[in-house]
Length: 500
Image 1 (cartoon, one colour):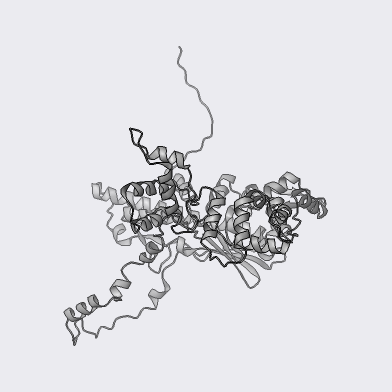
Image 2: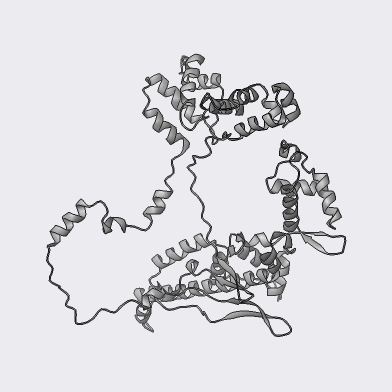
């Protein structure tokens, strides 16, 4: 094979370490960014939190004006910053001696603090104690085991009770049958508890708190709760019979059949159903071992002097700077290992600060562009939401759609109407008869409003809702209405039916 030299021209994108870091920081949520900043502070000696100084430029503002020159939209930068209380702290007087005479000894104060149950030291140990105490919610299994430990049981019965607790699902229902439970508890030689023994222990577990626990189905769960009500409760007998014998009619909301079967009037049946609706169909759902996920807004939006202002949340972006003392220790033309290491840390610190600044500027630009196009939503609500796609913002800001997607993912905006993910403001559109476009969010809001105002005895079907929207100029198919309704967790018309 003959060797030859060839000259070719081409273009390719090189992902430098700085660009990779900027892209990675751009897609982090507020909580993940806080963790990333803390890790950088711990690993890089050159980084530190600025006290009263801002590494970023706070004075830049995005002021969008119309052709007349009047400012309609303003989005000031507010990134980082020190604690203003530090500047107001009183300065210690040089005339005060370091050692002041005291009337009591330290031992006496220490003994008093130990004997007191509300000492300052105890109250101020850690600001995260309250969060840990609030998040220490017990699970359903822990709550039931605590009650079983207070109940005198034999070893065999306790083993059965523990197996029943393990077989409960998140809603508190027994997920397996009694025969399967017996087979699970059977030893290798095939010997295990009888079904009567398991049934007896199951009755004991069903008497624990919360009421209705360990029911095998909805019917048994509701009957267990009705059994705990006082005997003089009005309509108790009818409610028991309704749940015991006519659960299928109750689930299908066939009120005409229930009136005939129970031999009640519609007004009396309404009283019976009101009693049943006070019961909890998911008694175990109130106990959960899942930790709550807190949403920290990245952007604040508020109206000031008839203009919408957009500001970054300073709590999610502390002001970082290069430590001037450590930076001054770097010596030129010194190839020692220590000097090389400090140079590397200095360069990493500068890259990190620049990446954070780029993230903040990009986030503020995207949020400002979104608010500028969705001012009708901020003024009037969901029904005024305008159609918007990623390409629209990318074209205005001259960025790539992938960048807009990273910025709007897991980033939240605090508005007077609530906290929303930036993705929420992007939605598809449906054409109207007048030649315009309607946002899918606005259509969902109209559907929700129509269902809220419907007649409970004759709820609106999906076809009827589609026809009403068509009369308003929005052409939506029935299956589209059903899709939007299911997305809002609204049941179909037969399940929304109520007694008049």
